[in-house]
Image 1 (cartoon, rainbow, N blue to C red):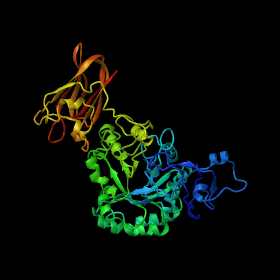
Image 2 (image 1 turned 90 degrees about the vertical axis):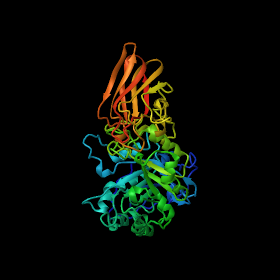
Image 3 (image 1 turned 180 degrees about the vertical axis):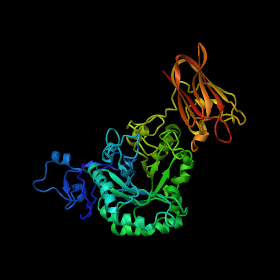
Amino acid sequence: MLRNILLRGRAPLSVTAGSRPAPRRPWRHAIAASALALVVAGTGLVVPAAASGAAAGPGAAGPAEAAEAAPAAVSRLGTSGNTIVNAAGSPVQLRGVSVLAPRHNAECPECHPRPISDVIDMTVSDGWESDVVRLPVTIWGSLSVEDNVARYVDPYVQQAVDLGIYIIVDLHHVSDYGTGGVPQSAVSEFWDYVAPLYADVPNVIYEVFNEPVAPASWATWKSYIQPVVDDIRAVAPETLLLMGGPQWSTYVNQAAADPIAGNDIAYVYHLYPNQGEATAANLDAKFGNAARQIPVILTEFGWNPPGEFSDPVVTQGTTSGWGIPLREYLDARPHISWTAWIFDNYWKPQMFDHDWNLLGGEYQGEMIKAWLAEQPYASPCASHAAVGATAVASSANSATSGAAKAVDGDCTNAGRWLSAVGDATPTLTITLDAPTVVEQIDVYSGFVGGGSVNVLRDFAVEVHTSAGWQQVADYQDNVLGLVSAPGSAAAVDQVRLVITDPSDYDPDVARVFEVAVREG
């Protein structure tokens, strides 16, 4: 790792973008080791010769020695039309993760924190293939901007240069702006210091304001932020800027109609399951249509099933019902870049449990890792012993939401069994094709885009063996969209849900995506 250096009294880091090798895959930027490393005078920052423009001279290190010591070269990024491009003008799709804001790294009493430098190293090791890391910079309280940056930004910028990846310096305000909110002067104070500091470092991208909330007016927001952008451009004329907008950075349609003045600006959208299903129709309306006109990057998205690793409303979702459809959508639109939220064991929806075990299955961690490596990830909902089995329910809400939907391998909203309105105690019985030793029964319920009020509230899971029916689990006051009941040591030929309180929502019906029967 590069040496940490104090910001006070030193010249800004100076790196000039150079040429880049051919991408390792379409639309993804390539990261390749340069043949020579230089030290930028007065900073202690090691940069690759390919980026600095310097040539090897007499006495230069041999190729093997230089390759071991040199960081990788990256290209200066900009925009062209609706795409992010490299210095050669070729399209780039950035894909990576956000890490925890370093100021908050020791706040979780039940977590085992790791140094942020170690976490950033993890994002490019052990099968993780992040091209970019987003670094939130939170309100600094009593610290000056200079001290905040010296302690919580600069070491990680240098680390990104060393690793040969991009880093998004994200001014992580989540608040109203202007009158009654964050004053424009506070945003200007930060960028007046930071913008010139890394203006010549091609690894660094600036996210100007994470999530302005209100006023919910693009015109008001534009008049607030345009002077800040103008000031940044005066000292950092080529740094890629990421521009959020009102209502937690969801105003890209308004940005497409009335862009911020200036060059090399990409527009930010933040997406979570509470905004609805990850269908093309919904996502096009949110940001996909705008992305045909302006560069768009999702600097936040994420999900976890309801429970301790998800917040009560915004991030509740599953890999099967929301994550996989989102991946399919974004993979088909490589002009949209993204950083997933959050590569952490504390802030929600995290990718690791409190002990840094990667969360898999319907949690997002394993799927994001596979996605970054361009590896397949199968829906846990789609393959189990009851797919296609005979299912009979006490009622159905419509002809398209019958009992068979509970065993169709589809955990989207369209793949649910819904009981009829007025059926206060609905039941669902599944007959397996053959007696099966069952290890676990996963019950998925609720609504993608809803919350815990939509899930099954009070219900029992029963299995039928040669000895008859037996209850294996009973849930009361449930708020989880995915529960896992134990199976049975004896072979099971039927599984039944007996529901005594369908939901806390009106209409009060049972909403079951899938009853996934896992063989022992």
